[in-house]
Amino acid sequence: MSVKNEFIKNLKSELKKRIDSNAHYSLRAFARDLDIEPSLLSKILRDQYSITENMVRRLSVGLGKSPDEIENLAQKIIHERLENRRAHARQSGSFQCIQSDHFEYLSEWYYMAILHLIETVDFKPDPQWCAERLSLSVQEVDEAFERLLRLGYIEKTEGVFYVRQPQYSTLNFPNTSVYLRKMQRQVLEKAIEAMEEVPFDLRHQSTLTFAVDANLIPKMVKEINSFRRNMNTLCSAESKVFNEVYHLSFSLYPVTTRGKS
Image (cartoon, rainbow, N blue to C red; front, top):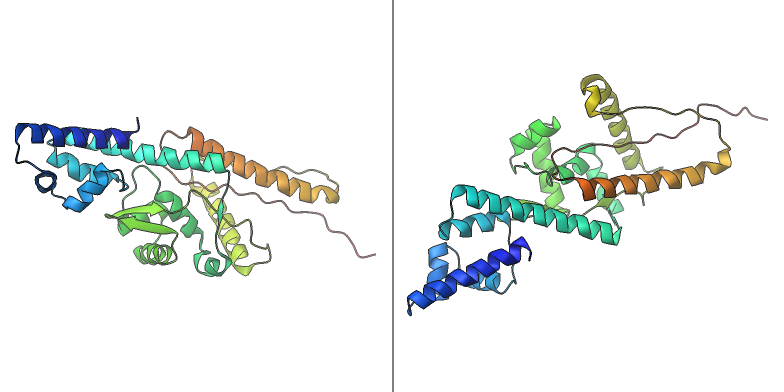
């Protein structure tokens, strides 16, 4: 049984126990004791409402659970939600493409980073915390969250942020797009910065130089894209917790030039 369903079962069991000991007790009284609207409690008991970790914390206080029990249960809800999303991503193998008319506003490198930062285990919906984690200004973070919310890439429920799709992709964009080139340039600049500032055991940067038949380039690009998807699936499937956000970038380009004939 899932953590969410087990929690609902326990709520129903507690309501029945209270009614059995007091014939005048009701769902409305139970909602009052849990500090929640009766209509919302009714939806939760019928599994018609998506229970978040914040809601679990709130209801658990009314059930008399200890702080440690509450936090342990909330973390289980978080991990279950993440695992469900990872499973969905593995099964569908699909990515939601960012709308081309949106990318003009989302081409700064940190928009994609924020989408994944939200999924980290210690994420805090605090602009200052996010700014420190990504080395940004608070203004940049505020503007990014406002834009991601307005364009529908994230949502906010009970003070908790959620990414609306498991994965977003820019592979449908033409390489000539000025905004895609802008983001790629920023990612390369971040890679150079990491080479100087990030400890070696927390990064990997290497190159491969080789001779090749130029007619194979389309096939090579296809293999690289496949590797990217496989790496993403590996990280989603085997990560016990999400605690950092990484960039993985490839640069495939010729260093030879062909003279005019």
